[in-house]
Image (tube, rainbow, N blue to C red):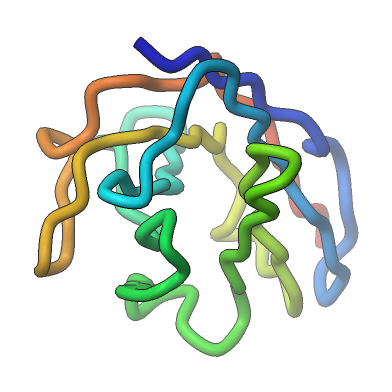
Length: 124
């Protein structure tokens, strides 16, 4: 089992940037993938993006494509979500997750380990 700890959330103004980090303890294999999801009040958890730990196979949701970027540092066992040009509708609790890599756009069910979540609030 992999333990995940997110950090980097907070309050940011519209158009600003923020970077979230997800530190993984335990072994992450090249066959695994990191995912980012978000959940706004009263809404279902939404896929944001994912990347296979090998660095390939990156997917983004249409709502964040071109504004958000996923990366990882294998030496630090840490994944990142760089968020630029933030909008009020990006306000949510953001979660990182780890699962066995799939070769399609992943869903919530593909991930077995989840972080505790970090709040991102975009003010207008």
